[in-house]
Image 1 (tube, one colour):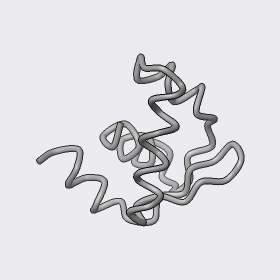
Image 2 (tube, rainbow, N blue to C red; image 1 turned 135 degrees about the vertical axis):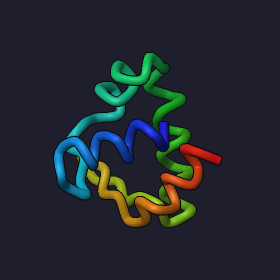
Image 3 (spheres, helix red, strand yellow; image 1 turned 90 degrees about the vertical axis):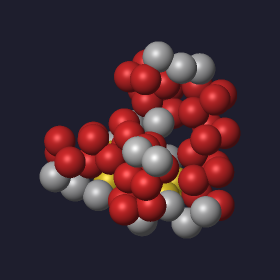
Image 4 (cartoon, rainbow, N blue to C red; image 1 turned 45 degrees about the horizontal axis):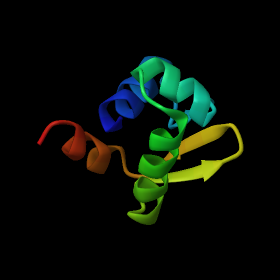
Length: 69
C-alpha cells in the first residue's frame, strides 16, 4: 500500500492522490476496509493526511521506507 501511494505520487508529480478508498483498493487488489485501516494508521503516524476523495502525502520518505524495508 505504501509503495502504491509513493508510485502514484511519482506518476502524477503531485503530493496529493485524488482517489477514494474504494479506488485505491481496486488498484492494489484489496478490500476497501483494509485500505481504510491502513490509511488510518498512516495518518496517525503523520505519513498522510486524509480528506474526502484525496490522500495528501505528508512524509513520502517515510512511506518509501515502509514500502522497501
